[in-house]
Figure 1 (cartoon, rainbow, N blue to C red):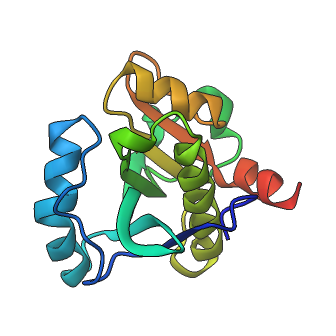
Figure 2: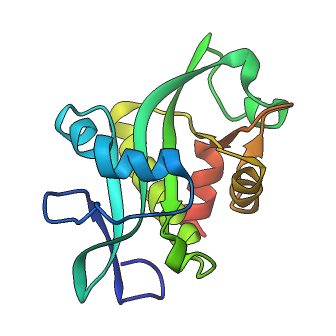
Figure 3: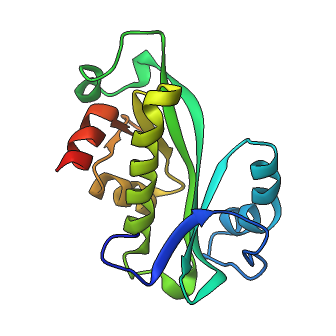
Length: 173
């Protein structure tokens, strides 16, 4: 599935995925996938999606999480407001975490994961209702990555948004 990389697959986290040795270099993201992700999936708190090599389907190369959230209308960037309803809280899908194994960083795998997250978000938006994607970048480097992938940064923040109308244009292009 993932674009021009038929050797890779993105799938929902399952018991056969070996998370014990995953390391991206950021302790909180490493601890999450090793210790918390399975519980979140069982409790339906987050959707957790892992990137694997087709020939080694248990080895996790990277992952991301999705869950429902809401953003106060006043926090939405002016550039994005024309694309969303004028409710006090705007329904959104949150990319809670995204990480790539340290041994595979620099291979554009993060772009593959975010593209998959965008597609899944768009596909589910008409079912659960969401006007945008939201991400809280873990640091400035991550925020720059999301900006390069079309997200708009909220002022003085590491929070970024991507309106569903923009996602629709991306998907249809």
